[in-house]
Structure formats: C-alpha cells, structure tokens
Amino acid sequence: RAIMMLVPAGPPVDSVIKDLLPHLEKGDLIIDAGNSYFKDTDVRARDLTKKGIYFLGVGVSGGEEGARHGPSIMPGGPKEAYERVRPIFEAAAAKVNGDPCVTWLGPESAGHYVKMVHNGIEYGIMQLIAETYDLMKRGLEMDDDEIGAVYALWNKGELNSYLVEITSHIFPRPDEKTGKRLIDEIVGVAKQTGTGMWTSQSAMELQVPIPTIELAVAMRGMSVFTREREQASAIYQPAGKKITSGHDAFLKQLGRALYAAMIITYAQGMALLVVASAEYKYQLDLEAVARIWRGGCIIRAALLEDIRAAFRIKRDLPNLLLDHDLSQKVIEHQADLRQVVSQAAASGIPAPALMSSLGYLDAYRSAWLPDNLIQAQRDYFGAHTYQRIDTKGTFHTIW
Ligand code: 6PG
Image (cartoon, rainbow, N blue to C red):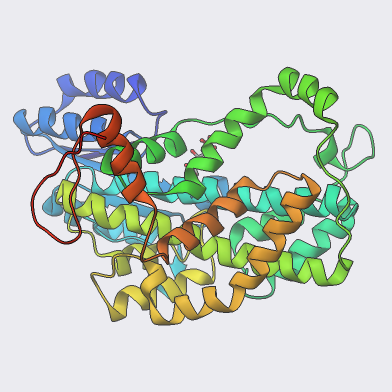
C-alpha cells in the first residue's frame, strides 16, 4: 500500500505518521508530499526504514492550479519505492511537450532539498519583481494599469514565466469592496512559512553564497517592521525620488535588468544544489531538475530551457554563470542591471535584491577579491594565521 499525505511541515507530519503506523505492514509506503524540512525527512526515513516501511520525501510545486492541472513533482527516497508510484506521479504531473514534470531525483531527502531550493529561487524572483514594481510606482510614478501592462509585455519576451504572468494579472484586478485596484488595499507585510529561510540557512551551513535569495528572506523580515519604518521615514524623509532618466528607456533597462538578475538568482540556487548534492550524496542530475521545473511549478520560466541546455552540455557545471550561452546573455544585459541599480541608489528606492545580484556577479567574475586583508586582520587580532601566495605552509605575524 502507498499512502500519500500533504500536510503542513513539522509536527503534523509526525503526527500523521504516528496515526498511520498501527495500521501499516512491512513494505507499505508513506509519501510525504508537503514542504518538509530536509533534515526532518532524513530522520523520518531512517526511523521508518528500521520498521520496514518505505518513505518518500516528495516536493510538489504548483499551488491550486497545479493541483488541478498538474504540478511539478520532486521525489526523493528509495528508487524502488518511487518505481511503485511512478505511473501515478507521471500521470498526475504537469506535461511539457508530453514530457511529465517528475523524475526520481535521488536518495533520502533529495526531493525535499530540491523543493526547498525551488522555493528559495521563488523568493528571490518574487523580491526582484517586487523591486521592479517599486521602481515603476515610485520611480516612474506609473499607475497600476500601466504597471500591469508592462509585466504583460515582459511576459511575451525573454522574461516569460509564471511569476511575471501572474504579476501582470494582479495589477489590473479591481477591488470589489472599494472599486479601486485590489493591490493597493493589501497590507505590505510579507508572511513566510520557512522554505526560503531554510534555503538561506543551508547555504550558510554549506558556505555557498546565495545573496539574492538571502536578501529576499531578509526583505520579508524588513516588511514586518512597519512602525519603525514609519518613524525612520519621518527622520530620513520618505525613500524614493522620481527617476529622471527617460521613461521608456528606463523601462526597457528595467526589464533587461530583471532578466539578468533572474539568471543570477537561478545560478545561485543551482550552485547550492551542486554543493548540497556532493555533501549529502544525492547525486543530483541538474539537467533533470531544470527539466521538471519547466512546467507546473511556481518558478517555471522560458529561461529554464537554457538552464537545462547548460547542464545537458556540461553535467558537472558548477555555476550557470560559467555556461557559454547564459554568460553571453548576462554580458549582454549587465549594463542595464548596472544602470537600474545606480538609478535606484541615486533615487533612494530600495532595490537590494537587484543590487546583490549585481554584487554577486561582480564578485564571481573577480579573479582577485580583497580577502587577503580579511586574513591579515584575523591574524592581527586573533592569531588565526594565513597562507602566503609564494610559499606553502601556515604563517603568523606579530603585527
Ligand atoms: C509551490 C509554493 C508552495 C507554497 C510556498 C509559499 O511551489 O507551490 O512554493 O510551496 O506556496 O510554501 O511559501 P511562503 O509561505 O514561505 O511564501
């Protein structure tokens, strides 16, 4: 028997497993298809394996639409257990040109880890889009309908993606109660259920830089401090002077900047998967990850075809920014990202995710970074030692 549960992550999962256990026999299979924390999945898998019960940790993305029309499904756990449910999963999953958006990803928590990073990327892209909204609203003083039209236009080009598409639907939506635009009636405090934070925590643990995703989590945190921000806005004057460069030219730059930052965000997420795969022995096939993200899930985007191609050409690509075609795209768009970031800085409109995407790119393409100084400082105040560029060994100086 195979039992699939979709319940909120954390104690509810353990509680359902506890309720199920008295009714189960050896060889039965429990599938946890919620957004469980990957380390919890490993513990549950170990406990259940001891009892002779199979356990699959399965990420599912796609929200309500995905539930009706097919989600992207990210299974991890014993392969033989996946094979038992494969026909059902393949039938249920979203299809891209007939190809189901599901595949076995790896052992243990591989599926939940990949889903967690999917959500981290989701956070990053949502924050980037929100910043472009702010730059249009406060920077260019555009109204909601005009802003919605820009996203609709962007969705027809290289930015084509589910998140840009739904954004274009959100802006023109009237509020039944007031007759105004609904978007302006929504309180600007972002909630979260943990997956973005877990992605940041895991990246910190594995020492993989994912600044755009971390910034997105931090900015949800910033949104909560409404009172303090009100006080600060009285002290510092409200953020956001009008952007003075040409309206149409800036809009074009903004779309191109968003595209560059989106590539950089996927690059960060995929780079985290590369390291996690080695650390946790998931043996992830990143081409397959990109393939099953092309349909059904929240971060589906035309760009995923290019990402898939990059991993098809080089299975062990450590970072998408090293891929030939994607790096060309970043090179072609980076001047626009720079322009948008400098305009945002000059006008005081917060664009930290766009800024840190650019910062990541600039750091990643720097063969030299000033960390020799950090090593010298560590050695100065704490005798932490340093390595020399000309001699092997460990050195300490009485500074
Ligand atoms: C998905 C979504 C889904 C859920 C997120 C929202 O892929 O279908 O990511 O998993 O809507 O958990 O996350 P937050 O509540 O943290 O924004």
